[in-house]
Length: 80
Image 1 (cartoon, rainbow, N blue to C red):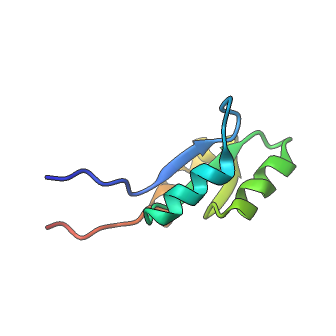
Image 2: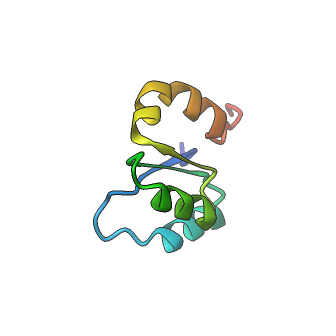
Image 3: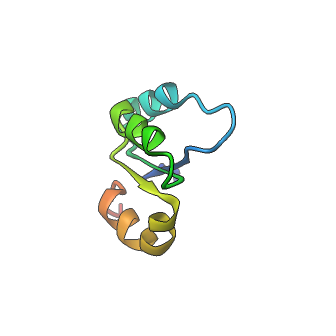
């Protein structure tokens, strides 16, 4: 059985993050990217959306709405 990535959840506060490169590689592989960060960092959230993330949300929303966000944005594959 081969493992496959259905959603990449990306912390915008991660040190050394090369946002554009990471999102670009994920998109090439067909993996959606959900970014999260501080609600006070509107520019970082906007940059994530501009880089191609399917969504960029505040950390508090990620915590409270994790199941909904994963269900909405994860690439659901049929069981084989």
